[in-house]
Each structure stands twice: as structure tokens, then as C-alpha cells.
Length: 358
Image (cartoon, rainbow, N blue to C red; front, top):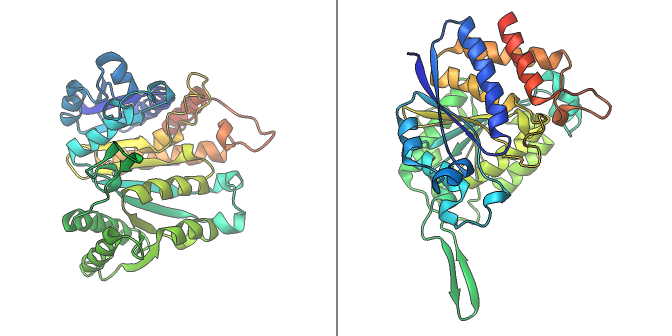
């Protein structure tokens, strides 16, 4: 038996891109004599259709008994009419909470081969290499009370944004540790001129910073950060921020790399970590063999780095991606007008061959 990896393919294009990530990962595992065992479970809409629960107990047990989890994406308009507690997206939120996955790492590095694919000018975007460290189990997405209630003047909606000292301390330490292994700079993003939660965030981050004197710290309001990501992305090394801000800013950072289909992520914090591309389910693309699988493939590389502790395998997968892109192969989201494109399956095949060729 090999190291157990849970596979949750999800909805929309999720199964297509995960299949290609598994293809590449199996090729890399064979080359480096790494024994893995893949076990599938249901999450999101696929789980709702079968069990009426976006996170069945069987899936949660599977994940808890695995070394790591590979995930596609969940959700889609098919399930938009369901009650909030059984929507596909609640499944992934519940899974993160159940496993204690509080730290989300989203690296955004522009491949030299894709400079022209970015919507920004070369002189602005060239050399972009940053990591968004997003707190994942607090903030608006998990706060209570929440909901919509009726009153004499109509409906009233409530979402609650809360953070504790402990939640901020642990995610800040992750960001400073990541930065210590990179260019030694953390940009902590908040809205401390408006939000009480951000005032606490800023104060606690400054306290944690004292543990890392070799790492520089700057504070930035979220609206300023959104602007600076477009104006001067090279100025960022590690961006530390709360849940909702990180969700938004990491999608913005994805476009610096040419396509949201390029970005992987790692959700850490406990023995079992979760790896997924940050794109959504893209139901309009599902089943057409046109989705970009690179974000899923690079998520598998992060799995090798953080959960399997096999830097050699992770680096081999990342080199394969660079090599295929340098050779000019593009899925539709990466291509300029008139450029030839290949599909999801063909991109996966070429990436797997590149891993074998070294």
C-alpha cells in the first residue's frame, strides 16, 4: 500500500482537471519511486446529487484517514436554488473547518513563457512572484449570527466578521515563516481605518513580527493593495490577509500570471492538507476538453512539497510545466489571438511526458 491520497473531483471542470493532475502525479511518482494510493470520495454538488449532503460522513472519514486531499472545484448554477446549508460550497467550508485547515497558500508566479498572456504590460508584470497567505476558517465566511430575517420594513441580512487573537497569531506565523524562506517581506492587508477586526489584526500581526526580526513588515489597506497589485506586482513577496480579502486578492493575483487556470493552492494547518486550483467549476466549459489543468497539476506539486516532503518530485512537476509552456503549448485561456491551442487531455499528456523526460 502506498501513501493514501483522497481525491475529491467535485463539479463542473473539476473532474477533468483533477484527472490530468493525477496523470502527471502518477508519472512523477513512478519516476521517483514514490508509492501512492488514490481513493475517491464525493464533495459538493456531486455529493448532494447522491446523498443530499455536500460533505457526506464517508467523505470526511476518507479525508481524515489520508495524508493529503486533491480537490477539483465545487458548485454551479444547478444547485443555486438549494437552501444555504446544503449548497455545494458549504461542503468545502465544512471540510476546512472539520480538518482545521486555517492557512491557505496561493502562490502567483508569472512564467517567463506567459508574459504576453498577462493583460498587463511586460514592464509592469515581468518578474512577478508572490504568495498570498489567506486565513481560511474565520471571518465573514464562518462568523455567526448569519442569515436573512423578515421584519416590518422588509428583509434584513446579517453576516458577522469575527477574529480572535489566537486565529491571527497562527496565520501570521505561517506568513512570516513563508517569507523567511523567500525574499523576507510580509505585506499585511487589512481595513484598519474602518473595521474593528482589522484593528485587532494589525496589532496582533505586529506582536508576532517581533518573533521574526529578519523579515520586513508593512501594513496596507485592502483597497490600496488591490491597486498596487496591478500597478507594481513585483513589490510584493508574501501578502498576509483575512479570509474574504484573501479570496478576492488571490483571484486578482491570478490574472497577473495570464489566467486563473494557472494558480494552485495549499490549505494547511493540520496533519491532513488540502490542495486545489483556485479557479471555479466553470460549468460552461465542462465536458468540452478545453479547461486549463495546470492549476490542478501545480496543486499536486504543492502536495508533494508540503504533505509528502518530496521536493524532488514537486520540482520535477514544476519544471515540466515550465518546459511545456516554453515549447509554446497553450490551452485556450492562455493563447493570444491566432495562436494554436490544445485541450485539457492533450495538455495533461504533454505535461506527463515532460515529467518522464526530466
